Image (cartoon, rainbow, N blue to C red; front, side, top):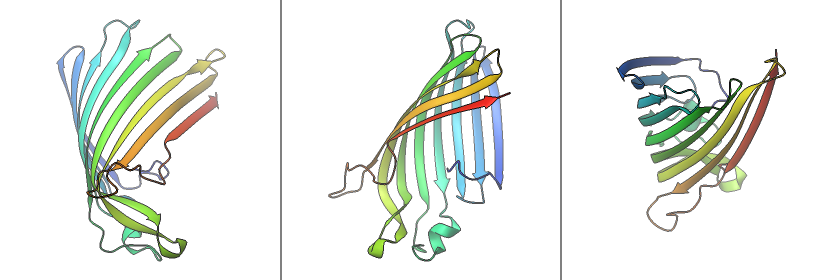
Length: 194
């Protein structure tokens, strides 16, 4: 889902259950209406260390996602495709978070997603982009982040590095090829002065 848009039509349902401290279970369902038409469900198991000087949190998440083609995917002129199929995916993720000090938190996350009928905009004839389905594809991402505060907690910073490997799993000559038009490496750094 794009982080470029506000969640104008989002509904979210979350259920949490403490199995036995420090282990927690979470099940959620999210529905987004406005831009992407996602229905997302996930199940997560969290482990929080009772010792703050060690691994603070370890999380495992498994989810199933369903995405309707958006209005633009179907009807944008030129390039919309009224024959698009809905996109589905299964994902698994593991995340570790460490409290390095009172002012610094580090985290690492690995995610693997297997898509069926991935909806993508790719260059078509005449240089115009068009919406297409990619039969099968996989995406694996590795993320490392660091956040904290400086100058007596007057500056808050968040930084991250994300590597994404997206590959086609279509039968035929494209099997295993990297998906184009998807950045492989992204970095970000933000700071806020309080």
